[in-house]
Image 1 (spheres, rainbow, N blue to C red):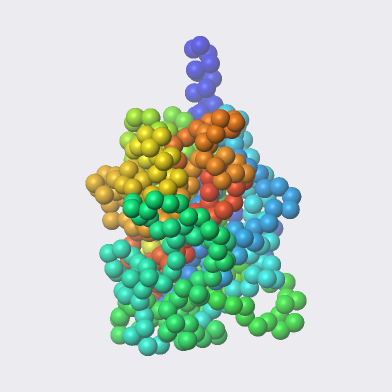
Image 2 (cartoon, rainbow, N blue to C red; image 1 turned 180 degrees about the vertical axis):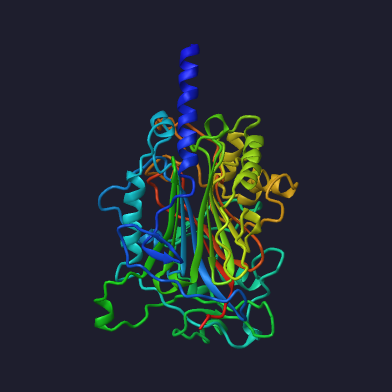
Length: 490
């Protein structure tokens, strides 16, 4: 017994030291960033434009965020990601986070990291984002501030205009199945298939009428007003045959990082890549013995023009037993405490953010694993009736956030989709719903979440997908982010 414990301790120490030694490494498409050249097999080196440390003007960009626990599922040949990534409005930035990209067995936790599945997912994502049918384009926001939604700085982080105009009744991003709104008085459960979701159908008419598809950013009013002027991609830009034959990619991979089963990648429109700099990563292990990477977080820090971003992908402690919620809270606090980005060389007196909360815009995504403080039988009854409001009153994350134990000052959009865990694979049924299923039953819960911190972010939608290849449903969101523009140095 003593020998096995000692052997296990050595394996853990070796694995932890290996993780630490590679903590700041990440993969990206070729790019010159000052004297630093990061290389992968893709892309052409892009030299960044020099900018002054100060600038004037505010712009907006769109960010598509996704989190998905794959349950160890490796993408199979012929897997089509079109319905997963093809929205009616291609975004400027894609932030895609995965958990359990490999099975969380002893070999993967203690052994050499298996990068094969991550490489397959990257190849599929690259193929989908850069397909001929997936062409990003842009338009300027409304010029008349009277038709703009409310300020970015609203307490809820979402304008009333969008609460009324964007449908939150769905649980899928691309193909929607509209549910009845949460209503404790409703006696029926409606689940009728409807048309595919198109964000333009839910925008205020005034905005649609003021589109301009020729400029790369939305605009903000010049007198320091922080009214929200949106930039959407709503139909394909007209490309000439010569442009279509170009080998240039629509999107570039700016950073990707794996830690055991967690994987985070960030893609940016290729024509906007020159505006992204100060790329850094930081990993925090919270798994075995409190340090290994089967649980924990991957964070990517970057700057877009004069605004700093931090994207945190996490997989927190699992379980429904007493004390598991406290351990999840501890995971969050340790991630905030231990995440540290190396300081970049100071340019023109600029200092880069070293901690998560030092960034201007922060988005936290992942399998947070918070459960419902409710008996399994009671949960099943409420789920069948689509009583989301009653269920969410027992949601551990909302309860802990409300009491100030974790995520104080953070925002999360309203949830109008079913619990995302735990399903029988290739089924709409939750695990343990019938006696025939061999899948171990779990109380349904909203384990998969997306939160944000800081002003200048507005969430436009918060929905879950219909993919059935995992026991989790993927969760998506689109944000509009305010960007401080810098002046070029001539």
